[in-house]
Amino acid sequence: MLQAIGLTSAPRRDRPPAVDDLTFEAPPGAVTALVGPPGSGKTSALRLLLELDPGRGLAYFRGRPLRRIAQPAREVGVVLGEVPGHPSRTVRGQLRMLAAGAGVPVARADAVIGDVGLGGLEAARLGTLPRGADRRLALAAALLGAPHTLLLDEPGAGLSAAERLRLHELLRAHAEAGGTVLYATRDPKDAARNADRVVALDGGRLVAAQGADDFARTRLRQRVAVRTPHAARLAAAVTQEARAARRPIEVATEGGTLLVYGGDCAQVGDTAFRHGVPVHRLAEETDEAAPGPVAPGAATPRPADIGPADTDTDTDPAGRAPADPGPAGPSARGGRASLREARRPVRSPLRPLRYELRRIAGVPSTGLVLAGALAVSAVLAALLGRGGGTPLPAVLAAWPDLLPLPPAALGAGLIGALSFGEEYRYPALAAGRGAVPRRLALLLAKLAVSAAVAVLLGALAAGADLAALRLLYGPDLIVVPDNWHSMAASWLGLSVGCAWAGVLGAGVFRAAAAGVAAVLFVPVAFVPLLQQVMSGPAVRSVAGLPGRLGEFVGPRWAPSLDRWLAGALEVVAQPSGVALALTLTVLLCAYVFTGLRRQARW
Image (tube, rainbow, N blue to C red):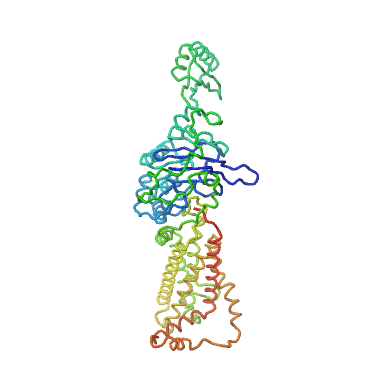
């Protein structure tokens, strides 16, 4: 049971609200259509139900407000426009990534592909899908969590007649299985033909809420369209016979077509035959009545009659009883409860690590960045080794003086920046597709995956550079230094730090370019400044710190730890290490601060 009580959108400037005191219900086991002309407030009403737009009113899904539903994807499936996936991602990859976000098994993605008729397009890229397949993909994403309620905005837009028929068959099957379906459409004939109940809107206000049969009888009129070269003669004959039979009838002409209200094709055809009038076209049509007050017989729900759903529909798919739904209606809060106050923060994916792995592996940009960084690194290492005057660490890292960072570190930073940059460019975690959740679990998943990719890229780059040097110049150039531990730690730490700077920079400023700028800020601006600060004479030194720590800890201090601690101190003492650590700290604090201040939307 879906219940809306007093939904009112926040007006913009001096304009009236797009939705004004809207109250209706969509019962389970039935398809409900939200009908109205363009600009009548259908989409705004759906967004108010989902708490995506500020406003007032209450919305209950099986007796619970949306903010109290632990797993929204398993309660509400939403189709608001397109599925904004990455154009290079495949249909199967997109749905499997969304399945990880919804916390459902990956097999569910393959099941909904067959349910919506996308079989054979599993490997197709999203950017190459035709219009109809794109709409079916949106419906598949809504069905991933096997939700009880479906909310769809113009689901049949752009589909062929056969595709619309299949779509409404899916919606009908979902309703017959006990689910609730609410979809918005501008076509009243579509609503009368495919829905069980119709909620008509005009100017943001309720016009009628009634059964589809009552809606067709009170809001639609049947007419016969006739195309004939003698329209005037046939109109006179039809009118004359109707008056003789005392039947109410209305005849009009529109664009060369004769329109007869109050008759059927058989009556009009017989009249034309008797009077010898040739007929080129004869068909029955449905004409929408003009908007007006609630028609007689319309069942318009009153706010006082609507409260949380009955207890027999108050359990979720797992059989658990819901939380207390709060006040039963507007009598408890004046019918004007603020949706802005009720808005809850966005939930991160239920399986964030699996989601991030599928996200980063599902687009070709990751492989292209890795391959490009390895190729550039090997070429630069070969050029640096040819001169013989470059230190071995710089040769293996392929880090000439003219570059602010080595190619591997730049590649790691770019991959990190894309991890949040693509989320904001192609948001997949929010139903309204307007926000990306700022939750700790998702951040930790992105940091972990980007760090693993950075370590892998750093190791592969060093190996590729070493192989290029041995192939071109022989093994004599490579001499393993004694401090290789600290060198390896410094190299991997630089790669991971750049990746994290890209992640946090893109997360704070909501763009991949900002993440890349945060990576380049460290060597270009921060390190020179820090070198000037640290270039002065040192009054005190931390030399001998490992030995003093051993005296402090006592006999439990292992002598082998001296070498590792000395290497770690050597890495941390580098200006680039200090600058990178400070930058990461500032970005992390900014991410947390903006995440707490900005109210994300589901």
